[in-house]
Length: 154
Image (cartoon, rainbow, N blue to C red; front, top):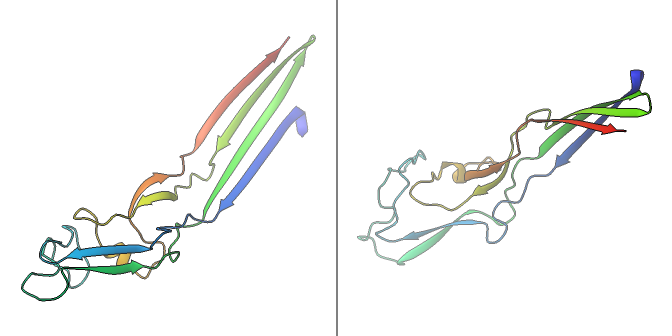
């Protein structure tokens, strides 16, 4: 390009990862012992209350399918990387300076999440109609990163 600059760009777009690929997302309720999560905000849910009290007869445990296998995905994520480089030449020697900017848009999509249900996780995201709702995020796309580089040849 002009004045000896080299410019580069890379755009990546990926479909989100499949959530709970095997068996979907199920919640096993044991009669008389399984409690609603402490932070439960779903209508009809009493925080920390027993889900199926033992005074009702029936199966000792039931499994409720909250999401079918292959029905929920993490959101699509995009990453834009930019770079600029310039080579300087003087008396048989060469110096090359470079600046790279990774994840220039500073996107922060969830890459993986914990979908295990317990007393610390809320059921609200799993009962939501939003297919992107889910569990506790465990990893995100790395934040914006700048890399500076220099190369000297003599």
